[in-house]
Image (cartoon, rainbow, N blue to C red):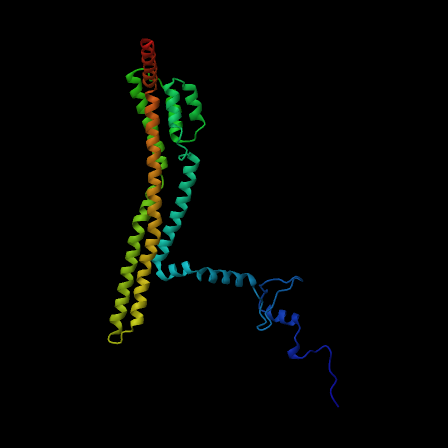
Length: 290
């Protein structure tokens, strides 16, 4: 006669989810992702709490390291990561300088001709309004120079010194950060070459340790890994050099515009006097011709 089955006792292979949760949390509070009902999600295979956040972070890290660029940098070792840091600094610096150039208005320098025309005609009010509407450093310097007296040679020399001192400050501000870009352009290929030399030394040391049992694949693998740092260094150096030269050209053009504006502003009285004298001579010639 079979024994009566106690309905309160469940077989071992029919554990309820609550039993599994109790077993999982026997040694302490369970940590994992909560379900909609407030319970901890449990892996059916292991009976352990599942932390989807940790799984997502691990997958993200693995995915980031599997990117082609990150993978090649990681293979290059310490030198590769140093070059990657230099490349990041260079990109941030390029963006910073571009924004600075746009905010200072260094590309809007087409007002010099109109400024000279106004000052030759003796219309300093129109010249001041023109430069007040411009954000170019030369316009700010010229506007300050209009407030200086330039009637005599001594006053013109003093005004020229004051304007030149302010122009040097403006140029120094525009040159800010260019030394860092120059250092990146110069040092990155040298660091790449250093990594290549170190990699070649390591490859030949492996050849020496192998003795007569030299595996060509080991040698070729060591060589291409060594050359990888040189390639990364050149990839960093070429755009850094190009942007450095371009930014130097922008600063040089801005300095030339400043010099033109300073010359026009300081010598505005002479320009106006010569224009009036020329107009008077032309008028006398017309009267004489009549």
